[in-house]
Amino acid sequence: MLRTAQGLVAARIPPRRVRQALRLLREQLPAGNPLTGVHVVAEGDRIVVHDGTARWQPESGQVLFDFGAGEIAERVVPLVNRPQDAIASPTRGLAADDWYEWGCELEDGAPEQAREAYRRALELDGSHAGALVNLGRLLHAAGAPGAAEAHYRRALAISPDDATAAFNLGVALEDQGRLDEALAGYEDAIRIDPTSAAAHYNAALLHERCGNEAAALRHLQTYRRLTRAHP
Image (cartoon, rainbow, N blue to C red; front, side, top):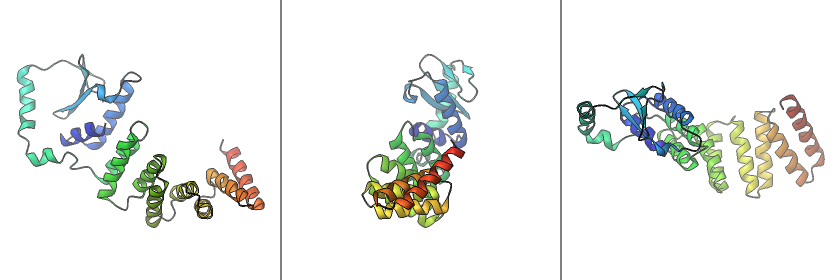
């Protein structure tokens, strides 16, 4: 999906149109059919999909007839004659936010490509807190809580009031067995966002493990009150 998107951007299709078209295409394909089973190309300013039997525009759903050889040649020649530097830099024009949004789109089905998208975002903007947090979470899910910790700490240095980064840092530290530091992370998340039910719950469990029964009960009561209010 990421390679497809890069190719369309290289053909001067705006990134937001590309994201919308690929999102619609995923809804149009039969369940279980991967994006790799179809070809997605730019024809002029149109995004066109073909699966070997039919051609259509995912943005409108309109079915297209095959072009004649002459019209195909008219469309291919400009691509062949495109300057080599444009072909060598298919991601030219993508901003950090574009890469970040691509990462969000890719997470469910292609976490490795999502990690790469977040890395590209950070190459363009090292202070992109959202990319740092999301990349950290994916690294943690891949079994690297230490690497995730580093990304969460960078995010908090940039955005000290990021409750998600603070909470995720607590989880990463807890998974490394650093319980006191993890508890401090959960408490920071609660300080930033007192309505974080997950932070109260995790803090309650850690306080209980550490023998702080009164603190554990306080957080657990808050957790129950929050989950009753927002089931």
